[in-house]
Length: 117
Image (tube, rainbow, N blue to C red; front, side):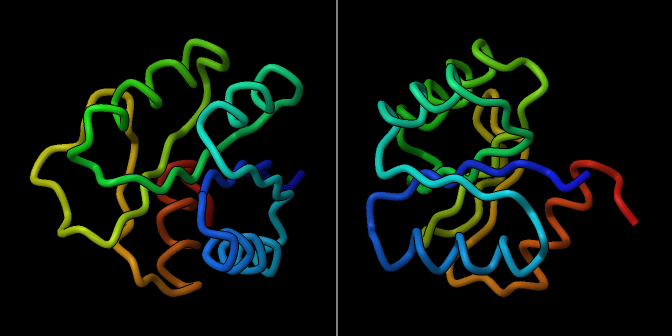
């Protein structure tokens, strides 16, 4: 059964690109444009992964990850950002992917989190 992925990205082009990349990897993809809408989506449907675009050093990053995991404790949170990679991930964040990223990198990160072949 394919993984369900929620993409949270305010920029329409970036959100659509990430949706298309994840769909090409045969994941079930849902997309929203804000954290507020993401919390509503997480109350309405099951997700395995959330791709959240925000600077990893932003205080809202850890807050978003922790609140999302309160709604769905199994959830994996992947932060995507154009900023340099963190030396230590914020609380609740499972992985970081630096923009720009490739289809291969996205697939690699998801497979690592779920120990998929």
